[in-house]
Amino acid sequence: MAARHADVYLTWGEPPAQVAEKLDRVRELAAAEGRELRYGIRLHAIARETSEEAWAVAGKLLSQLDPEQIEQAQENLRQSSPEGQRRMLELNEGSTDGLEIYPNLWAGVGLVRGGAGTALVGSYEEVADRIAEYHDHGLDEFILSGYPHLEEAYHVGEGVRPILRERGLLEDASSPALV
View 1 (tube, rainbow, N blue to C red):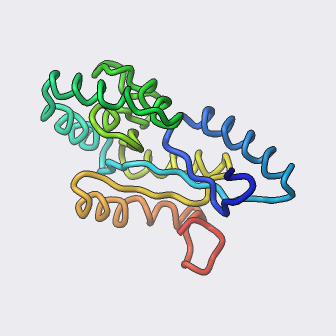
View 2 (view 1 turned 135 degrees about the vertical axis):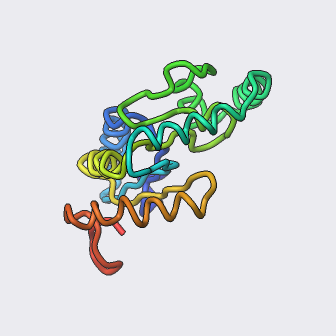
């Protein structure tokens, strides 16, 4: 459907190799339709000056959940049928152990939230590194959010965006680079 009708194919945050596989499949399908698409990703972000600060924030979010809440949320999410939700559940396996599924990619959000269940977590530089890595796989559109939204937007805007701009990955809105 996306290959035939979409302008931008949007994926949720899985490790870059998994995202690359998915995008390759979509590119083939789009080519068979005589089309080229743009590609994007939906992630949460927890970015701070240091990696330790960012992981402490992620840990604090997790510490506010009780195991019964996680179990109930996981049961509700398992009853959801979409393929994307199934893939998100596989990333955390319903456990609070091993939630860093790739460097700076944390599956903790998906323990209790449907939809995009991963977050980029790390120093401003580390988060910029992961964004650049996803960009290298062909992603140009990034939808980032966080908890609380305003504060995380500030951290990404003030800490990560200047690094992306310095690397040539972020320009003004009229540019084809990341915006």
